Length: 522
Image 1 (cartoon, rainbow, N blue to C red):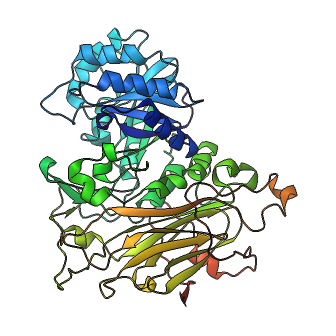
Image 2 (spheres, rainbow, N blue to C red):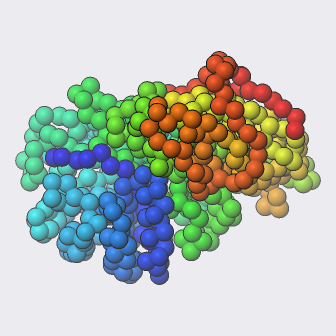
């Protein structure tokens, strides 16, 4: 199978009751600007508006160039309502020839969230869909070895293993390596298999920026350590290669709009936020995660690692200008207290799914996470005007640079009951994020969700002075950036401190760098 390297985002269609074509177009426009190639449309079996929402989505996507959709059947969304062969086949036949349908070798790609027990049903679906399907399910509940045993039934695998597990601080590629191995076998006996050869299977790697959910009605309340997850996972996606040469054919971002689980990268859409999640989602924009994607997508499609970086000729200036910086942070320190001095509650939140430890134990230190990628050496400043503290970082050009700045160094933390807004500056532009609160408020409960702040499509002060080298003109500032705040100077003095505070993120661990910073009283 010929599969162009593609990046999709998982879109929860179940949240789109009465959603307009304009909202779909808005989402698609934002995704396209972030170099995302399409949406994987997660649908459940019981929503009466599924057909309507899908028609609207495909209609909206058809008005864009090179933006695709495919169906992802959710077998875990409503346990009391089951999928049946007729419904799946009819849905697939209805949309398979739409202009925006993503196809592999002329066949519609179809995915799932779980549904291992429906294996025999998928054999029948293959027969009922005119021309067949390319079936790439997520069966993470049985893991790589379970997929290996059923490899003759599928055309590939999608992995939802995108977060550290209970009591784990970091996510490794152990599961991904297992899937690549399972899908790279040259032959596998399967007397019931009606599929094509087991060679050249598709691996769709799941990547995600965050995880926190507190939905008591769904019995879901956990936090997976996410401070360094986004740059670590993105770097893993660029570097992952099976010894046989198999790399991830596709990436799927989990998710575009699952606000209740805090792994969204879209702008906030109030109509899609569950009432029970509003307390920890409202005001917590995640656009910063999306802002850095164009660099990673360009590197992924060119086969470059984060350490290698991009040549200047490959730098996506129409998407990034001369650079982008994004910061994300939790808005309540883990050791925050109430106004009367009592320790804030964890709200029953556990460390990882099915975890037993408190989510408080998952937080090693309160930090502002900063991810920058720049075309020229640049100075990045993170500060809190209310506390009069800021950190100045010299960021070298090349691959992405990830830095973690302690709340303590910014004057934030339990000892500062007032809190303050996080402010970032780069190339003469600045923007303020939401406030880090000095206390946990009237609820007495910590919020483990993150807020982001970012400057996108920044223009370096020296833009235009080296066009013979760069081959283009400087790009103007874009979404996510504010006005004012200091001037950069190009930072071409060779100061090695910048290499310490701005090291590239590796595959195995996040960088926590405090050396080489200038701590300044404003």
